[in-house]
Length: 169
Image (tube, rainbow, N blue to C red):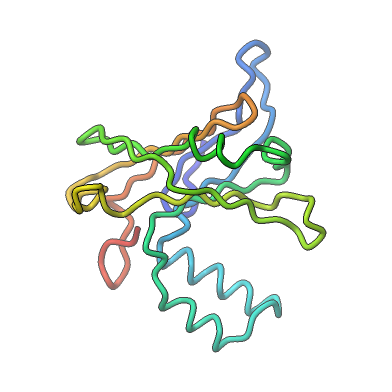
């Protein structure tokens, strides 16, 4: 188990009966400025986006917390019911034990429209009462998602997720 972009720790999904890896996923805190800027820079370098478009998009905050799941084999997400994905995903703050349910999920697909490249889960930044859903003094947040009978989990050390502008969630 290693540290991934955005401070996530994730490993392969394990079949408890056989104790063998079934699939490995990368789980990233995708709404972080640092991660968004890196993805946009990659798109520019790959010729998929113009520099000025990337710069404009980099300044646009998503307004929600986003967690991305990607991997070489996204088979569990192919044909998955988006409503079920949304209902099976949440963030859990360590300090307050607040469970933040996913507000939406978007499956990013290849140009052919069949192959799933990634799943992006969005979570509200504010509670129903208008408070920030992840408090400034929160140190860790867990992500959990159920898909195709598998549970994907990642732990984020949000106390270390900062850039020059401050907290980077």
